[in-house]
Image (cartoon, rainbow, N blue to C red; front, side, top):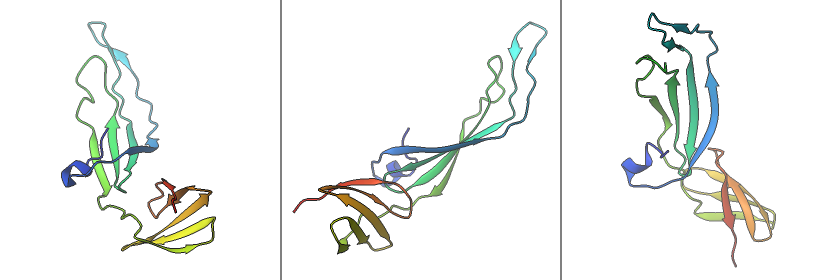
Length: 133
C-alpha cells in the first residue's frame, strides 16, 4: 500500500494502518438454482491509514460474493488530509528529557532518553529521532 497523495507530490513515505470500522447487518447467504453459494454482504468496512508525511485517508470496501460480481467494485478512497507535517525547524526548549519543537505551522513534543527519542505532533504520528552533539 502507498499513500495516495505522496506520489502526486513527488514524495515517498511509510504507511501506518489505523483503525477499522464496519457495519454489522446480517446478510443471509444462499445457494442458487445451480448449487452455487452466494453471500451478498451489504456491510461496509472502513480502514483508516496515515503516512509519515502526515497525510490521512480511508479505504471503504464492501463484502465480495465468491460466486458472482456482487461487491466487486473497486474500493473507495477518501483523503482526509493532504498537506504535509513540516519537520521541526528549531529547538525551543530542552531540559534533557523533554523537547518542544517549533516549525512554520505547528509544534511537536519529544520525549528523549539519552541520545534517542520519540516525537509526536498534531497528527499523532510518532517520529523516532536520534540526537547528536
